[in-house]
Image 1: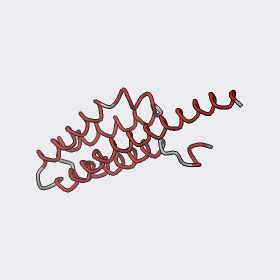
Image 2: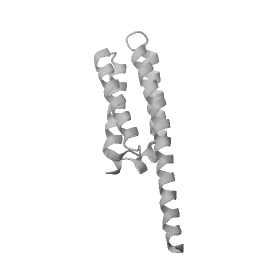
Image 3: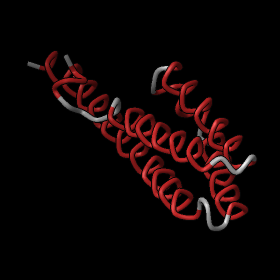
Image 4: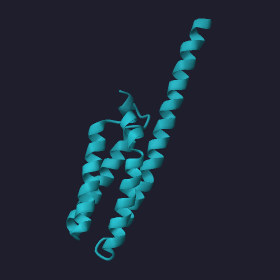
Length: 125
């Protein structure tokens, strides 16, 4: 019976860490998604504000980049990086259509990054 407790403790620790990582990634992604929604609202009316919001969100994204590289796939992060750059470029040239498209794609990609960490049956299997 004593041989059961060590593996059970290790599995419990791993489960706890997985849940902590999922919560951490989700907590990081939600403010970025909210910022992108705010930037979309500012587009067309106040481009400087929209650029500043996207730039701030990208800075916060890059600050968490090392942690995200450990817990999720690199292709998801690379896609998000490219979409952040596309949104910044569209804002710089004041192309509202391209800006909104990049923000919508980036929002979807950030949702994917967060969903990949959730403890769902789909992710486990």
